[in-house]
View (cartoon, helix red, strand yellow):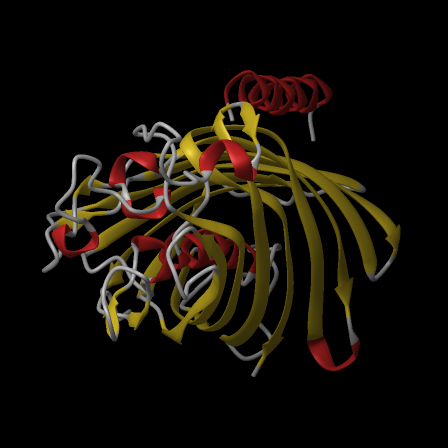
Length: 356
């Protein structure tokens, strides 16, 4: 690789990370799975597109991802549970305190994907997540001092294709685009204080977006002893679902630097700037007929979205029998949320891939 070109590319990478730090929300299960899918598309393809296709063009991938949300932010200001929970009269009720308060949100996604390499430039993928979420609550409502709601099931199916262009032995530019099909439920119900029996659960507990969405990713990878890559991602929503809302668009800027520790093991560190817009529209059954219609922050569509900057570290390992293992841990180092909103504490993932 030309020395000047190498320096320029490194400068571009550093510049992108710097921009991200100047800029980067509690996610719905659908959004949580989508971000992992974007990473999955990149990692599920051989990182050496010029390599002769001597193995099967089929590749299977399994990824497990988990995240925990606890505590509250309004912008970048931390709030205690006491500041967000409305304790009843004579305390003044406002648009930023609530009689019901989620305390801990845990999310998990099992993602199954199948990829096919048509030739050295074109790859296709189909991915399907199975999502589980549990949310602990406290409230001032009788018989609901502490309660838990849960949901689980299949999420939205994503079909995508990737095109490698301007590829060489050391560099690879890739464009990925696809469509997300609304196969995940948006009619999950559970026992909440809003009324007797099971009712429609908030946006955070629904398994899909309910709309046709279009994920796009543009990425660059450099392959040498010390490797780096960066990517720009977006997920564009269309229309509104049958409950009269649309999740916000998502955008991301990610950079990662990898160092080879052993011939089959590499470590990496990266930054990911993520931006999510507010929910457009609303599911009116989540509201109550009061002066303050939202019983909890997670029922207010305006209290979704925001910016965050995540630090990520992990290992890539080439295993026997052509298995590849990736382990990653991420933690926000900056969050500015449309709040009060639950803040992310950490997220982790592990995936295994194999040519078949």
